Image 1 (cartoon, rainbow, N blue to C red):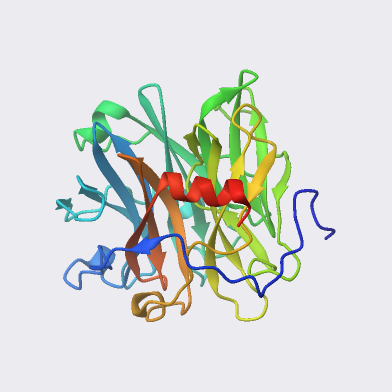
Image 2 (cartoon, rainbow, N blue to C red):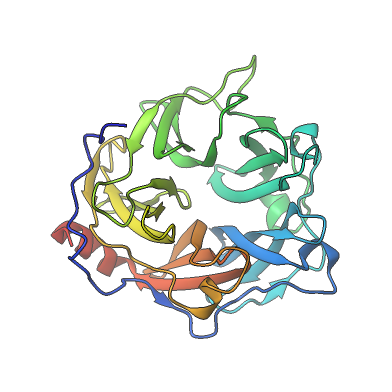
Length: 329
């Protein structure tokens, strides 16, 4: 595929220090052997800040290799004050129930609050067909009070296509909702008039960002969590994979505040690389993969799956990452 318009060629020798700093007590969530639903892996989490509390919805797997979602809560962003013993989201539809030999279930949740409703996009897998994007909702009041009355999910991506890494942006643009998704190897965007997805209406759109030549993200890229609104634009974090070592690293870009279809800055170097032990001792070595981040008191908290086994967190002052983007580092 030809390079996209926004993709600069990157000098791989221009190495910089990581912008994100790992919490020294990582991982913050690990598998619990006595919980059958999360006995093997607890990783890739969405996160949302409501009433000064950070709500974390993480992917969990047990011996049946079916993904479900667990819940944890943090007040300061790094310490877990509460973690529920039971999953908050289970497989309910045929499209996420195991029918083949591969992994199945509900994977990689991404959360967006719009008015008084939380929208959760996730990857639905049945172990036989290409993964698709599902969308469910829950009332904000139910969610914060731990009444997990999720509405019935809908498939919003077309059948027969490998599509993942989707989320909805919290603001409208030209009276339309902006939705991110990933058709390999690019991050795609689509503008839709509503979120009903009736009558077999599926995500479309066009690529926004793609792999860069001679870079750490030269194989494929995908969105982390929903972009964060800042005074300088929409802060977009993403994962990228290199052909040379197949490792997952994390990068950052900035989208125009009023026209997020325009990339105004893109860091040359990764903001986090898989160097810690817990990022290399699990199901997939050399992997960091995030589905959500929050900004609290000027600090960016990024929650990420490590080696497809653990959940970790890394932080950075928002001002620092914005300054790096503006300087083009």
